[in-house]
Length: 245
Image 1 (cartoon, helix red, strand yellow):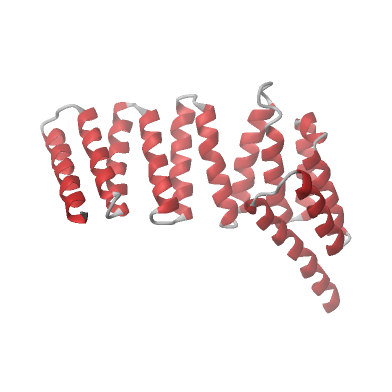
Image 2 (cartoon, one colour):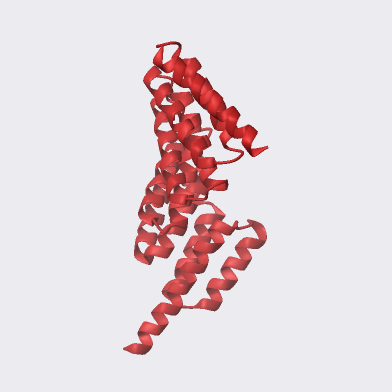
């Protein structure tokens, strides 16, 4: 079966190259590379990615940026599942977001940017993650139909801040509350304040209890939980440093 997929993929590549060499329809050329990618994906994801990159380049040359974006999303998804590489996921989701922004497709861009920010945080690129979450949240806060969604992304930015620096988290919290009254009144903002107090007081028990109480009502996903675990470790670290003084 693998041999058949390889032969089919090779045939589509030859067809794409023929269209390209004869100056035929660029759309047909891109379509053939896309079909080749579908075949290669069954046996060799990296070759599939190479074909999708060619497809994206052709659509970019044609000015069809939405199609180019979709190809970069497919590439990012391959790096999520078939050949895991979070750095590459970030790169291709960011490229897709940039293409969507150029087409004023902000909602589609936002979906890609969320992936960028989440993977950046997982790789401990917190400055990048915070900047992207803020970009999304401020945009949502300025739109009447999206302003209530902003609290989720301000919250995610603050979780990253908690891991990096308590003082920066306090400053960011104040800034976000000023930008979004709905966030200021949210359970998420109250939770962050309580967590900050626990960190400031170096009280692991209060920290743990605060997280448990919040999780009972607003279930924390594994991504958020992992950041809170790292924030809690900072309390232990501060205790250890105090013991050394």
